Image (tube, rainbow, N blue to C red):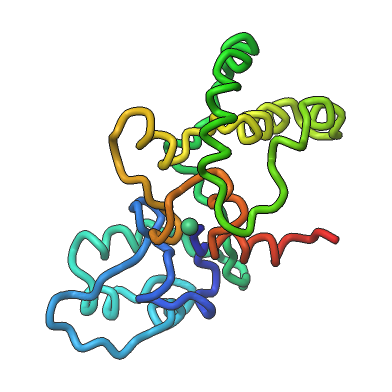
Length: 197
Ligand SMILES: [Zn+2]
């Protein structure tokens, strides 16, 4: 989860994730720098990045990353958005292959359910997904979630023993499908903000 800079009033420079092209999205101050600015809007002057402040508090690399963030011409509120990681890229696989690995994933999902997860994703059948009034691409995405074949970090770690199994959003728990969409603090914030009954 990232915060998208609009007016910068609700984004904490040091605590929030707001850089675009880094894994963690957080910035660091120059070494030994005594920091007296806290909110991103303190880095903006007359609708543009304040070069004087930015150059003073960030190193060269961070400065370049900050300056790459476009500021909006219109006064707008900051917003939260979801970062689709490289591991979440959508690819279409054949139904045959899905069916073949479904059983294995079923077992993995059972062993990985987080405490407090009382509703199994598996109780939602393909049938009910199929009848949803949503785009086919989204149906396929949900299908992949239900079958535990979304390449989340915990699954990749299981399969190839590579990378980091932790959640990229919070960095605190294993990134399972359930964690990513329901249990992660960041996911819960998004659910709260979502216009759902
Ligand atoms: Zn998390």
